[in-house]
Length: 236
Image (cartoon, one colour):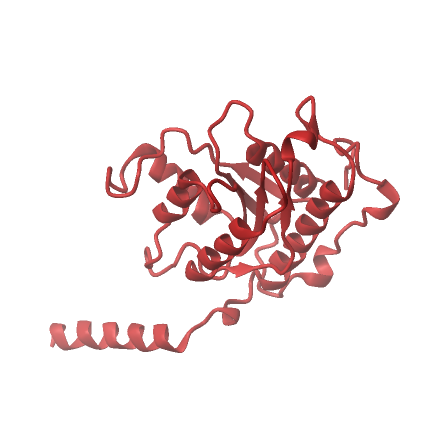
């Protein structure tokens, strides 16, 4: 563990995560791969800055992180799945073991930019694999005013709809403009909560990764058997 890029962390309280104790026997063994998405294109985007803080914490815990830039991503139905940004996003979704979704709250809900990214994630199987099913998710929101939980609650609904394992903890940062200085988040309970959320995300990712039985569904097994039967009957 290397907390050198985390000046706000109390090193003695940041405990390493025991990967071996949490991983399944069928685990791939690579560092947890976490994709971070944010929901604002502003030059000073606090949802992006919070995601960047989260990424630093995840890397300190031994994860590999990637962040998707939503600039240039078209609206759903305004382009097809072969669009460069859509392909990039779907490849990152396929790559990751878990995700962090960080959105501003705008007019009482998540931003359209955040929703557009989720809407481009395919829910149906590709090559027999559902890209989001069984992957972990941590949700975060930032607000310019008083603390709210509208957006994280909506993100939880989306995570459930995408068949993801959304962890219990979450982060909501009110008056976010006052929580940053020179591009870095100030120390305090709101920063500590982000550390809590990322720590929990890593643990849940290790606990559930490599355990396909966690999300193996009866209805999908029936559908697979029916598809096989249809192919056999057609061949006959």
